[in-house]
Image (cartoon, rainbow, N blue to C red):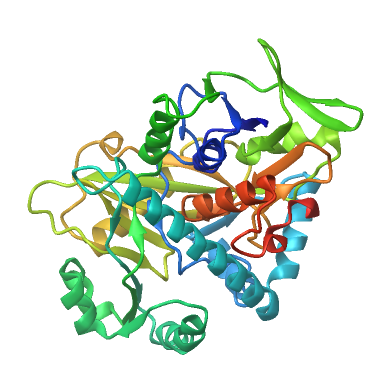
Length: 427
């Protein structure tokens, strides 16, 4: 089957690889000069399979007023005269209840664990001498650190429920937390406790995309074409069916077109009457070079109160966070990056150099999110058009599972997990 994939981020590239494995003729169209150069470029780096609870939770709305008043808030909102923003917000608020949040979490955990199995199989198959399969992959575990006693107690109450869903976690007091991760010694007296998940992993998402591109171009897969620097102008329809993709060089014919272009997919889908409820959650990161002897964490750390994640990737520390519901593209807000720098210095004193900010490679990306947190994976209501969209901040974590789910459906195989949970037709 001739398959054209629009978008070469981590979701598009994993989809291309899985479909090439199935023997399809795969063409990837990407406007950038290489894979993973936008939202996948410098994300948090955590493959966080056990922490997939949606942003739309029962306690979120109560926190929003306080967040909006803080300059260093983990969430920002700027209202716009855009009906799409208000439709998304209305659906988001509707999902902010315990029943919906728990149901969504169960579905995302199944997809997350499936993704973990596929990622581990991929790494085992393509293991490098450094053990990282070319993208600094490592299983280091994760600590979610709580400074507020009530928040920690609430997290502890969830352990049995999480265990019933397949998560392997344990609660640690402050001494056990610092013993496991000595880099946290500087804030020992501030720690109420932490939740430790040994199975969580890290990796460089951009380099993972590059690794996939190399595999797809090494001659092992017939009929694979990666067309970088190619702008997609629109989708071609004939007789109510999508039959190709229009580019400046002409139409690329297809039996199936898969949209994996993140938030940029929305205007391309609109002329076909497909209007997925997606909104960009703008996030930020810095990448701190680690000098020899730096007291940086080896285990991935999440600062629960500030919603900032820390992941050691090779000889760097990736620091990422924020969810800004704003328009304005990927312009880097110095204030948001400054918050990441300040929080990192407070948590891990001495590891952030005093050099100009550019040394920390500040980055911003637009994470395409659905209101309820469930991605859209599978055939749309338009014949010949499939979607793999809406992973929000979990693109790296869920990419392999989403690609596997889509490949199974396209091949007519019984999917490993319930495909209806992520039905793209609801777009």
